[in-house]
Image (cartoon, rainbow, N blue to C red; front, side):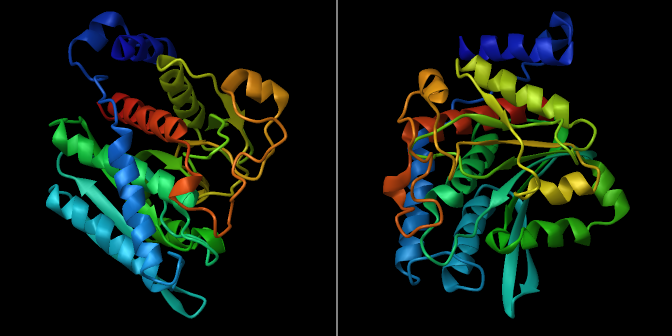
Length: 312
């Protein structure tokens, strides 16, 4: 039933005819198993525990996180590469993973930052987005999905210090390579304990052409799983900003951080009014105990629905 709703919602957004959509079963996105995502978060927690309590830029916990994610993708047959950069006197890293096949001139990309602040392990911010992107990528392989477009996934370093890794990646691309990326979706904090369901506003200042369509696709994906949404103006405060500045269409989802939940939002989503959506934002208590499994599950499912629809 969820897939049928997703198909109908996507048709309304894109204007595709039923006959065109029926030819390939392109929107049969998998239901992402939240237990798998939580297992990845447990691994990030263990890495932080074994490396001074964090996974921050220039600290051993970050490199260990990069190496572990890379090992999972290598085992699944992705073409991976680690891009290094220097910031604040320390070496930082981005991880890029390409899924073999698809039109190399028409790239759909998902990404999020992998680093934490120095004060804690960063399980919601942004282990949640990173773990969900990883599981969606692994499900591309596990389901035998054959996308028409080329799929690329990115995990960024030093976001917490000013979006450094994603800027370094976009800067490293030639104009031709930038033009091949037709869509970039960013996922930064998707398991907040007092959660909201926000979609990046495609009309906010600085958004690139095509961003509204991506926004609407994500909204339609939430509608498909019966979740109401609100738009949020991210104002260049996450890793989509470098892509948008390069003229690439962007959007993303967000479960909330240091905003207090309103009574109207409680009526829509549940939770506690007047309390921060993430009371452990940038704190040592941002551990695996700081995750709402329902929010984590829903945001991951939306990632998959949007990706399957865009890539095919």
